Length: 318
Image 1: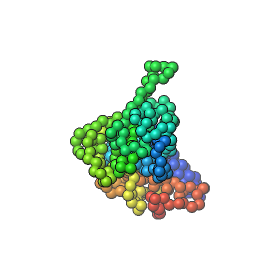
Image 2: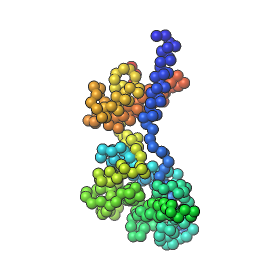
Image 3: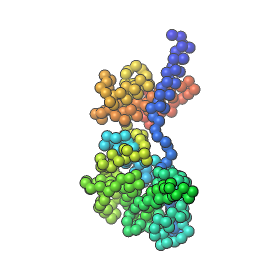
Image 4: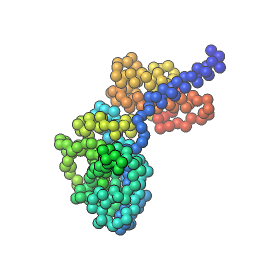
């Protein structure tokens, strides 16, 4: 085979893997379901807004990862909610004491995703230590279109008091209330279930999601919901960088390896498809081989003179 033919074959191979990769990794719509609002009453000051905004995103992101990880642990797709990291900052027109119910807040909050039936707004209310005597609450408001009273849509609002004392447990409470907005009810059972009605809050002790679990009942509800989507990338942690992803040992990490691992998730195959050696062939192994295949595509591209090695490690050299 001459050089021209070899290059043609290589380009065809690269193109086929590239195309197949994007077909395999495409997920559902990236349009966020959850909008974040940082609401500051008129008489609340002495805030470090930038620090607060970062913490809010971090707390919600931890909740997002929690749901994905727990859904995966319980044998479902790693489904979780999507959220918009571009937080809306609202400077209230009234003082702290004037905001006593949802309508007091709602009237001043812009609706960026107007009339989206699955819209959820999580409101972090600065200066408040509780809302209706609770450390967090989910409320629903239903509306009818003016020109069509029969068309009623409901929107979920999560209100999170953003007082200093509540910051110790804001991570777990936020995830709990978002769970309600995703149609999860309170449950009984293990004390460390996220959706348990009563969970001890120890003053001065920070609550962490890593200490909690999602019940199988909650996972089944989420699995059937159209408000969550699969996010396997959120469970990719502590992956070895020296993993050999050339499953069929043909000298390439490509579509064939991806398909073999995918088959190994459901069937017995003659190759070792447990790439991370955790005892099972699952979505994590599939993600590893996909990532390695993309590295190989970049390395083989004739338009690239230099390959920046990613966190997955160096492309395997044969």
